[in-house]
Length: 255
Image 1 (cartoon, rainbow, N blue to C red):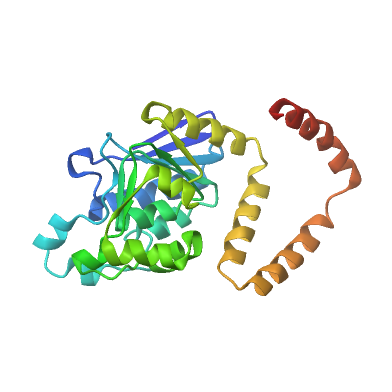
Image 2 (image 1 turned 45 degrees about the vertical axis):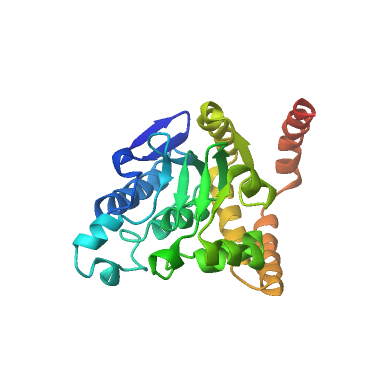
């Protein structure tokens, strides 16, 4: 489900009766929507959430997998129409994950694909890959240790235990925890701040961070040096001066 207002696209995984489980149809629809919002000039930031109050997404639809012989083995991890993490990565604009309930296994991986995570106080995260007997294929085994530390990631992977929202914030997994009622309003306020930035600049900055994060530290520093030299050489002192007063005024307002 897609709604656009004020430069912000709200994308809702809309299968509440199935805890927003990612069947083939929903995975393809997510890809189609992310392609659309990436192309739309009236969209500058994206909020991804789940319908209802129980789940952000419970991950792959295990009922579909259980009834469709070979569905899991035939899934194409490189195809963004089949891999929801790749579908989110299609979007060059900032994506805020508003986690309104459980994010389990593949749903946990979808949450990690977002640029920023905000969680309701009722949100919970779990990696149940080992308990289900499915090896993660959407990035969880590599992203989570880099975000919260390897021993914490192993604890979640090897137990399948749930991680509550407050602990997820303490561990650096989510940026903010809100009441259920304030989750989407908070996400919209954050998205509105992002929407004020030049979209081309923001897309380049997002790409710089992501490319550097995927590389070693020294490689990331080299990427930054190369891109900043090329970009900043085109910025004139007059450009900086024209923006300085607005930046200072906004800073005073936030103080």
